[in-house]
Image 1 (tube, rainbow, N blue to C red):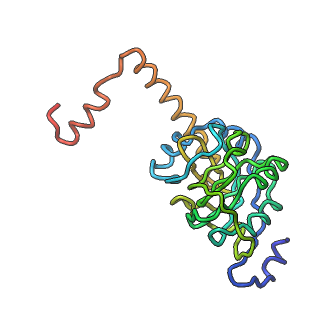
Image 2: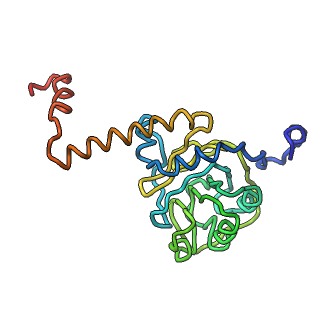
Image 3: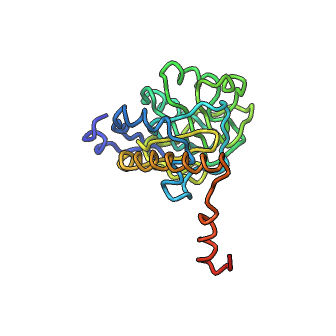
Length: 232
């Protein structure tokens, strides 16, 4: 739907479907696919990222841009519409209100995501069909799981700002996920953040080397302690 037509639409209460995001450059996405979530988080202030979500697929790294969905807890009508809109590499981020009484996605949606070559899912809610997700080829981070299936009644919204696990996610945000957690990087900030993460990795490699050799400089932390008034 064009932006002009989008502005003309009057949506029923609780419903909205906004256009898909603009794409970030492929080389930028590829580069961030090698950046650990902890490193990105350190470079963004050490206080950003999801809390309370779990990887259900193993250790495959997730990297892609967000298609966001807000659903009524336990309902996945708009998740199916988001699947229709998403393109290869996209990560579907679902604000399910943290509800664990009904699964929002399961094995059938996973199969659709595999066919479309999506980047993965982040869900503040529940999933089911754990044996299928455990095969590991489709990343999924969720608050929990249950065998109980969803309704398909709505309402819901697509490509609006959502919250998952305490993390605000905007449509088109760059989403990174690994065993440490999930983080969102605003699309306009991604290019400037990348060199900072690479420099951080280089610094960590040097520290790791001194740790391995047992030659770490104690002054690194003693100076901080003296600045706080400790007599060290």
